[in-house]
Every structure is written in structure tokens, then in C-alpha cells.
Image (tube, rainbow, N blue to C red; front, side):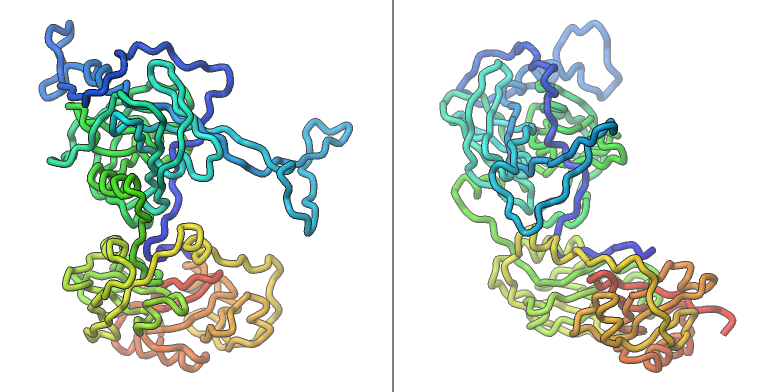
Length: 512
């Protein structure tokens, strides 16, 4: 089947976030060995003399001194969030309960909900009790409790949070808390040692070590982040905890892992210190974080797309797959299949660079976009809008599943093994095609054709082919023939499926 490669500009897609772990009720917080709290800034140094075992050249003598000096600033964060109470029915004779049917039309009352526990990590950044953590650790929490390494607990209140960067600030009452600082004067290099401290699985007080594995990682629509990748073990409950360098300086905030199993496989991601400090400083000042927004769905310019469009292999830019109606991009005249090559004079290498630059703009800022449109360079001036919430953006990306029943028999025209027909009212209803969408509908695909190998499904709407608008089967065939006459091995299609526009490169049969 088709794979979604595009992203709504600034929308985030999910990895496994290392939060929401609980201690399970039988595992207790380990005895604390930390030094008494101090109001002075922690200024740890690396290494220790006289260890019994000499490390390899270039390795730190031990992480023990670093951990002892920074651990008092790292906290366990326990939260309680209201969730829907599961409703089950136990039928005699069956070993497991069954889910009870929902009460149609009835709104959920407080009796239908319950407070569910979760936990994460955080760290003090000032002596007055200000703590940095992840947004997804404390989002919608009704109760927040902070536990220090010396066993003391405090109720915390939310100062501010930013969903797009996944950062939040909370605060506990008191003073003289030990704290650490973000490193701003230098950046870590790939291969530098790191130590992550946090609260995996609710265990608390845990240190893991590794190296910086990569920099500037894009993990799916991160608008404010250019992630550090580290191989220090990060698990559920580590979210919001700090990553330190060997001098005890905070170089990142642990936020996500890549894992097929949900556990650590040595691929973790941390928000860089520069980004984290900028956002948390604004949250502490009480500012609302607002970002620019175009309202387009984009993807990287893939080699097969370049080939289908007749572009050079060195062409770079962000491919516009879909435009949200009524958005700033739509009002400015940006079009689907435009390739954005620069913004305000700065080159755009791909979708990630465009996403971050638009997000860095303020609502109302003028953005000058250089685009390639049908092989010609043009300029589009856009007034940036306000970026919607993550929930709103995710809803824009969600499509409606087509029914499972087979479609009724529909006659049509076969082009490159694809049977297409004009959009009728019945087909609009069948495949949930909006009234403002035009093109041709795929009703069948020959199994042995190139389209069949791609898995083109019935209900897919072909909007454009070879940079031409498709209005009927004849215009679709003409666009395909034009691509073949130009000597191209494939034709670029703009298609719509399950409510989302996507680019698709269809190889042309060689025997025609």
C-alpha cells in the first residue's frame, strides 16, 4: 500500500515517548545518598584520581563523580491524569471480562473517569524550585508530585508548557534547591561522552552512559527541535530528564526513543540545550509560544520525483503535496506540486528546513518563497498565520477509512493498468470524496502492472499527472502519453487517499 511520506508543516508524528511509567506498587525508591541541598550552582568536574582500573585512552576515568554531583538536581515527577474508566462485563463461565457497550448519546460523568498514575523525570534549573521537564509528562495532569534524590517530596504547579517543542516548566515552593545549568557556550560533537540521569520505569535515581550518536536528527515533524541522538539507555520514565556531558553540563532534555519493542535499543533523542533554554526562559516569563504557519503538507524532494519532473539530481527543495483550504498558503496562491527552494533568501534543502524556518517566524510575518512551478521559478509572498495546536494539526492529517465492502462494478478507462473513471455522486459517497475535489477515481488495478506493484487502492483519486490537472480519463491518458513522449521513465502523480494528498511516481510500462 501507499506509504505516507508527507507531513503537515509543523505537525509532529509519534515516536515512543519515554514517559508514563509507574513503579508498580512493589518497587520502592532506592535509599538516597545525595549530599545535603545547597543554594549554590553545581559546578562539577570530570574524572577522579587513583582508580584501580585504567580506562581506555580518551574515556573518562569514571562517571561516578559526575553522577554524585549532578544527581541531587534531578527529580522524579509523579502525575495523576484523569482518564476514562474502563467499563467491563463479567460473563459467568468466561475467564476474562468483556468491554461493555458505550451508552449511546450519554455524556461521560466524573463517575466514568478515574485518576491514572504516571511518572517521568525533570531537573532544577534554579535554586527557587523551577524544574524543566517534557510537556507530555505533565500535560493535563491534575496532580504533580516531585520527589528529590534525598527522599523529600513536594507538590508542584505548572508554570507553562509548549506542546510543539515538548517542553514544560513546573515549580515547587522552597529555596536552596541544588540546580544545574544548560550549556550554551559550546555544542557537543558526535562521539562525545554523555550521561543520562532520570527515573526509568519509576525506579528513580538511575544513570546511564553513552555517546552522542548523531546531531540534527529529524524525528518526524519536530518544528522547534533539531534533536541530538544518543545511545545512553533511555526508557519509559526517563522523559524530561537531563543529558549531561562529562563536565556535568546539561546538553539536552531526553524526550523520545526509537524502539520496535518500547524499550531501549540504544537510539534516544534529546532536545538540544540551546532550544530548551530558549523555550523554557519564555515559559518562565509567562509568554505564550506562538509560531508561524503556512497550512501546507510537504515532503522531501525524492530522486524518483525529480526524475519524473525532469529536474536535475542536484535540485533541492520541499515538495508541496496538499494545501489546507483557507490557509495563508492558499490565500497567497501557493499551489500543489510547487517546489519551495528558498524562504526569505535562505535555501531550503528539504521539508525539515522549511518546517523549522516557518515555525521560527511570528504570526503576521511576511515570508517570501521562491518556488519551482512547472519548471519555472516564481516568487510567492505569504503572510504567516498562527500555527494551530498539535491536536488540530493531527486531525488534519487523519483520513477517513474507506468501507471494507468491495466497491460496486464501475466501467472506466484503463491507463497503465489503472482503471479510472470520473467522480460521480455515488463514488463521492462511497469513498468519502469531498465536493471540492476533482479528478478521476481508481476503481481497479491490474495485479501485474506497475500500479499493481505499488498497491494503488480503489478509491484513490488522481488529481494531477505530469504537472497537469486531471479532469477526466482522457486528460489523464494525455498527461501519461506526454511524459512518455518526453522520454521519461515514469510519471509524477498527485493523488488523494483517505483525506490526504500524496505524491506518487508511477513507472511507465516499457512495452508501449
